[in-house]
Length: 336
Image (cartoon, rainbow, N blue to C red; front, side, top):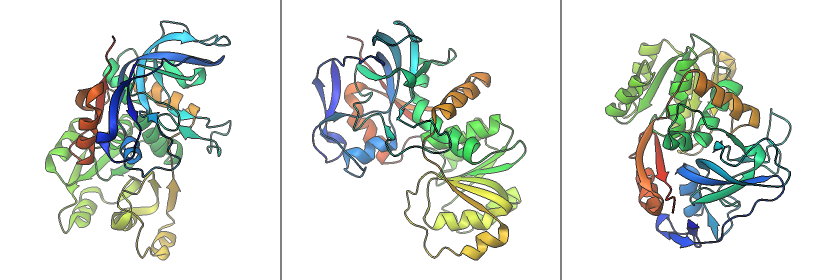
């Protein structure tokens, strides 16, 4: 089969299209012939050597959708020919409230979806939502799961609440807007670009501000009257602004910190407002199942950016690295 192999750290150009052996399933595994895959920031971190536990050589890629072509001897509930999406979270464990120490993510150290075929545990495949195209289905798993757990399981979003999504444009942020709007929240966003705010308004956001403005937080406070729930992946100075925007009893859920640590964090600001600061990463199998159900019930379509061929992964990663994308970057997988 054809796969994009990473043999050396050093950036997107280190990924090379190679012919490699087809995977073979163990007793409780299935092999999926992928129709499409999608990129995540995790892939970019791995090629730059910025992710823990990197194993080389390896096939990257956490997101994918396709057709089951082979099943292990103890697989009963999944059949050859089933159309599936893949939950990339591996070995979460039985406790839905937290992942266990052995939790990892498909696409390094376990070979992933930047290939024609991938093998996974049978418990990690779910029926593809029928209203989604292959490209949309492939774009859903990792970002959709991360957004759902942060917003619903951890953030406990409620109908009518005001939700803030800073830095809209990436895959998780676009799902956060869609999911929060579907659940009845009033959603606001920030971005450096006015056109990204306008795009967000087209799929559920009420409004937003450009954070490049000196008074963006004051503008946002006037616009919203205060925030009930912020879902943040930025950190840095922005996190302190989220605290100032929060109402009494509000929550901030963090699933990343692209701008690094929060400098000079003043705890009294949090205690006086009785705020909750919550961490979130990926999600449990239950979160994944509930996320897929939400997508099906509301017929949510993932927001897609550009589509590249499998052999163009490097070009696709450079687009992500430059922050040019709005929504998920997708790969089409050759079928021969």
